[in-house]
Image 1 (cartoon, helix red, strand yellow):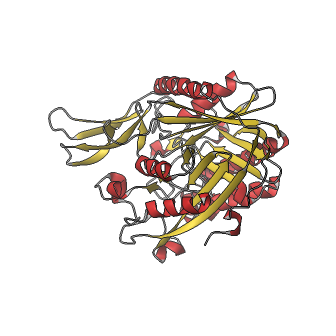
Image 2 (image 1 turned 30 degrees about the vertical axis):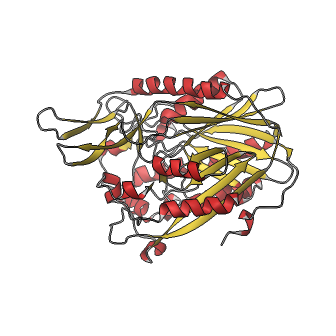
Image 3 (image 1 turned 45 degrees about the vertical axis):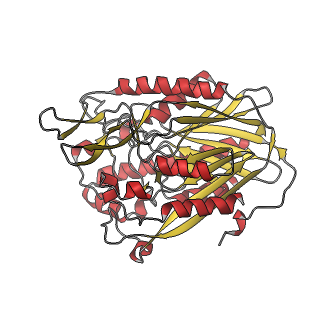
Length: 449
């Protein structure tokens, strides 16, 4: 059944678009380090603590409004949205924007201090165990959490107060900074994380530009399929890890420096099996045995970010320059829905099972947002590129963008071919075949009907 707010309204006259945008820094304060980075139920190792920050991290917000609809697009330089339902309720109470009209996502950088994965830290049983063993670090982790949540709230409030008449346009280019990471190695006799140049990979880079009446950029929304892990497990601070907004942060802050007052927001597309072509973490087959050797570049690797960031940024500017048509009056609509799907309980869970999972089910949150002739499909997980292509082929919208890590995350979402392969991430998946693609397709059909 489609929730009431998802039902398409009768055709109405388009109304003038207004847009406002803001960013607020959420980087941890220097005195809070070292901070833990990882999952609290993993073995806590010395190299799981970040000792400082390599670059700033931000919460960003774009407010959109016409005569009868207000939408907030919110991005967070983090691995996932911490407690989607709680954080959208906080934003809604602060701004007055309806909870279901908040399109919030994470850039999916892995190199930031940990927050609660599906809830606040204090409600996470794994964090409470960590708190007992590392009370000093846990106290700083809680300060960091409060800092992040406050930054998100402030960015949304500032974006709402900055609303002004605007126009919207979309442009495309290609960016060759990603690669399919599931590679079969004969020496191991299995799939490992690698460089599968022949594997499916979407190079499409899309940008949505919001500009004011003087054609000054208010905000730029960038969409591309790659994991934000150029500096994954980096050792950039005297041989120890540093927090970073990674590739999304590098290109967004570069754009904002060159366009004072503008906000650049980067969204991961169908990036579940897409890695950067350069990373501080690497693997390659041994010359003699063919077995894969994996390690991390010691004492650095930050230049990789400059190289890929420069290339990716040039592609973003090409996409922006390709925009030729703008609209200043558009229809807008948004809908969020939970699809309850079956899981395989025989596969061990990495986390404590929820009550829902104990019943053999798990909720997949899907969000549809229509901005004129642009359809943004928000997925609460890490969608594989083949499923992203499937959605685009089935969509009735000419401009269809896939946005991963929206509202919350359920981990990797694979098509059946990848789910049945003996890859690292398929072996740990609890999803059943023939469930993900039909759920994605059915929601899109209802939204676009």
